[in-house]
Image 1 (cartoon, helix red, strand yellow):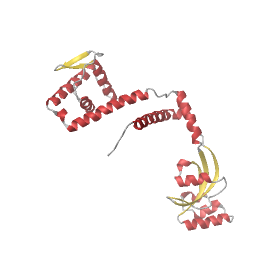
Image 2: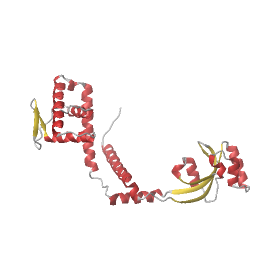
Image 3: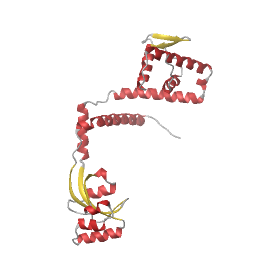
Length: 261
């Protein structure tokens, strides 16, 4: 006989808090001291097994439901349902069950067809206006030294040679060349300064980051090629679902009267 009583099943029992109710839409498959267990309850319980990656026969599921009902009745007999802690836990778990049911209703109305996702993809691509940059930099520990090197560059010094001579960063030996990168690959201060430069120009003042002081030269820039729709479709689906749920919850909060002490 299948005798495992999982924590999830116990949680479901506590969430119920009362005898398992008879459903007129589902046939009775057992009674326990007069309390009814229905086929609908067995099917719901079987889904919990599947969610845990377990398999069980109808008889095994029924045996567990009977055990849960016996334990529920004994807990009530001992007055455990009157405990403040148990009442709070039962209230919370009931709220979670109902919230999940509500979310299932909400998500069932969200359009995640390929057409809808493609429209969102096109919108994201248009808004991103993503750029890639080809730049070099000279990294110094001291701001004063960085300003002195800028003066040298203004006087006609070669940027790559100055990087080889002065830069403390690993790219110094390559003339400060960082190759192509997008804004997200660099710290915010560096990315912002790079984006403001004209191609062929270097920063007129040192750019401070957590690594030191940078003199940045922008060699080239180009529009970043977006990832293909098919490669990000699943990610987009998750984003659309999450955003829709977040909007729904925000609307509930906006319409509610909420007070905090």
